[in-house]
Length: 153
Image 1 (cartoon, rainbow, N blue to C red):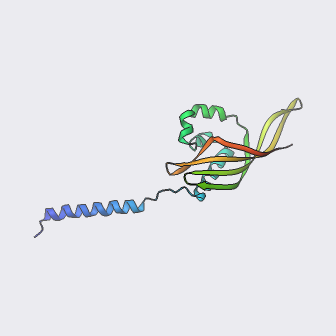
Image 2 (image 1 turned 135 degrees about the horizontal axis):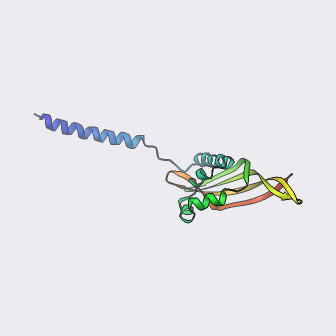
Image 3 (image 1 turned 30 degrees about the vertical axis):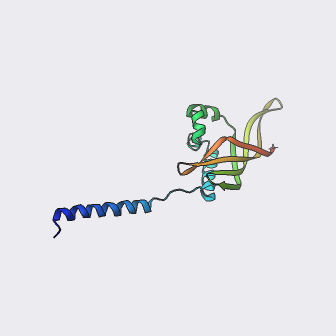
């Protein structure tokens, strides 16, 4: 005959096993997919369009954060030229690394012919991304601008 105490201890163990099994099955681990990188690149560019450099700092890789404090990052980017639009042209993923090719439209107030003028243009960028801590983070120091920097007046 099973005592009430033995039955209670056994019931608790079964409950814990089922609870842990349910938790393990219910936890979805993020994967480094093309779709997840596309989503992250769009989020990054939405922040760029809004000029939200605080959130952008949160998206840079841990390696870059080791060499750039948040204060220095915000100071260096506070007056960066403004992006006015973007289009993702390509996304590539290979394991824990990814690349995004993005065409950005930009505008910048510059002195023109002795006066002030608004310069507009577009450029293409190849961004380097790394998958860490279950999400994609950008390596800004490895991002390269290439192609046209066509100016429009």
